[in-house]
Image (cartoon, rainbow, N blue to C red; front, top):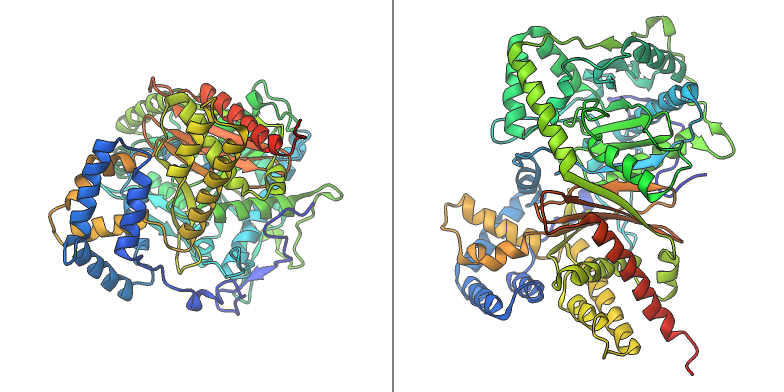
Length: 637
């Protein structure tokens, strides 16, 4: 059962001084991220604003845009400065985006920033749980060796162009470090760190998974040794600690920074523990079973909602939220009832890279014909020289104990506030949409717009993540799903005087409009990151904030009431993230051949949002859109 994405490799070792593969062979020839023409971006901005504001607001915005974009005006001055920056940077946006979108973000990364994914594992009992987990660890270690030896397959865009692969060098071995007002990243080369961190019941263990060979290269530790150590870890940590230190990583970033300083100042052992955790190549969480959930064959939406919620935040202090370290670039988790997944600290990478790690792990650990794979290396690793797992013991001061208790309360409040549910469209999937020559992603995005419009009588400013990896160190730009065309379709769908044929025409126009904008976004022709660059240029040069960026419509445009992303896979894969604004929705979807999986998140404190109602309207929207298409192909009487 080889899944789409990276296929298994018979990787044995990695030599830091040895020859590399072809993963980065196209990097030097990748184009730089372009700075779009000023008038092009302003035109697209106005078009995106039109369906989101009333006429009076639009006229004020139109004046602000004209003032900003006039000849020799402030916009052209900033444009020239931005173009100069682009000449001297490999990617004019990358540093800014890393800082503005991630490292300077001060709210908790849990729910608000770090996306999660969930998939099913072939587990039967406690023994195969540990056996499977050991093989997952080895698969992740092999993936790490593949990345470091640059032997990951080069990914390509729809036209066959190579994509930037640098995120694979950052995703593993990277840890976010809290700072005062802004965070930093810490990367740990293999020659400085051969261990991972294993979490069980809120306890943390250092476990070596890489072994240095006499020739200076590194290989993965035998799976039987890791399996033995995992049993020891489980047996040595049967009860949760009174003061689970990991809960501190769920706090507001400034709060966590101060708590970390107190924790390290109190004791040298604590400081060393922090260093060991931050240097870990990745983190593996051994979670308990989920109450009320059947082993992995359970695909009921309500059961999936429970396990998908746990993937996002751990389901609180009574469940697994304390069994995490949310600063880690990748923290994988597995439970005995057959659910696995990971949480991505978003500053390290984007979902397109993280999903390839999942594909690789699933492909390497399990096939229908072979069951659990051997994972053994032909390289002999002396078992008697392998280090046992080391438990990290903490010395908790009264101050830190208070910090932890406060964090536990805040965490449980955040988990209670997050209304996260799974919805499954069982009636059709992407094959039906493609059979009518429509883009599945665009079709789903239009359905999301229709669902929101039915609830609120207006469109939401919608963020859809679109990769820009066609360019050197490209990350993402915004695909604008709320459009003049989608608004026209939504109005037509709720107007009984509009014929089915007219509705179908407007549906096709809306879908095509979204598909076209998607192509522009991945080609570096969207406007969102460009306007951000112009705004940051003004700030860096000490210029007074241009009126365009203080216009109320600009604030409304960037208040993303709908934050969305697609994560496709043909096996059961659920991705999740929280809403990005207090009155918003976070929606992720997996369009499979014959069904579509959705996760939807809102904040319960907001009286205006309703996860369950939106899910119902979304299912209705998909069905009515399908009916509109089918009507065209029904015999006319």
